[in-house]
Length: 158
Ligand code: HEC
Image (cartoon, rainbow, N blue to C red; front, side):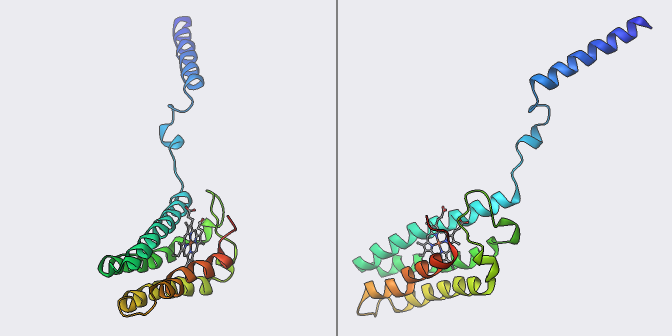
């Protein structure tokens, strides 16, 4: 009886030692957990960053008269705006360095309409860019203008 108890105590001490020394490895799944909120916020930020670098390429290609490549990138941006719409669910208002303002959820329809307008404007831009007299004005009105309009209302100053 004494021997059995001793063995039990011995195992208990070893187990406590393992749990104290390796608190994370004892539950590897929990310590690696990433929340859905984090995935969504990081996803939308990466699409916005991508659109920014694409917009700069569009500007330089169109200014050089390389309209075919510029038009492909315009269509890519147009699609990205549509992909952004579902990336603002209610549980992603805060955290993970988001710059999204509460206005997005208070005026959801206005925000989504502006995303759709920005998407449509990129398609329009692709259809007129070759025939327009002023490439720069067209880019400002149909591409850069929408960034400013939306950021001034829906993105925190950065
Ligand atoms: C309809 C609204 C809307 C339009 C249009 C829009 N943005 Fe944004 N943008 C946002 C919001 C909201 C955020 C903040 C997202 C976050 O932090 O969760 C953002 C964030 C960004 C960021 C920061 C991304 C990061 O890594 O934190 C960049 C860069 C950016 N936008 C560039 C642009 C450019 C360039 C355009 C135009 C070509 C544009 N955006 C058009 C709403 C918009």
